[in-house]
Amino acid sequence: MQSVGTYSTATTSNNPFAQQQQLLDLQQNDEIVISAAMQQLRDPGVLIIAHGSRGKPKTVRLQLTESAITWRTETRKKGKASDIKPKMGKLHQVPLSHIMYVDVGKQTTALRRVENAAVSEALCFSLLTKEGSLDLEANSPRERDALVSCFSLVLDEVHAQNWRDIYRGPSSDMPSSFDDFDTQEGERGPANV
Image (cartoon, rainbow, N blue to C red):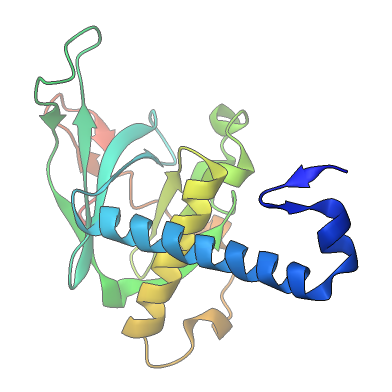
């Protein structure tokens, strides 16, 4: 008999009440994970990798405010102590009302670039806006799923019509919002969309 959580497989496979309880436990755990992700998105924000259709991916701090999502690059000097403040790029934002859809996986041109072939589809998602896309790579599949759920809940609140039913053309035709951003070194990166 193999143990799964606090239930044994013999117990759960033969007992529909135990199966239902295990499913409820998993759903409750998912709600806790999503709630924690939402809290972190609001303050201090989530460190995540943003991809553009040109240039190297950058680490950004993505934050959710009452009316917008904001992001800025955040870089730390290699070999420096973690208590030293990171170098922060220019703050960019997109009003929540401009986010039309959350795409899961590598659906956009930026994420389908040859340079990103090694990036797992299970880590990727994009926020499709009226101005372009913000193409993101999470640190784990669980984090990606939690962030997608958070943004889905936010869009349910923001949009009167059901945004999930919106039919759009392929998101690979959408320009990346991450392309037109200037860092202090004069590199190209996220745009103020």
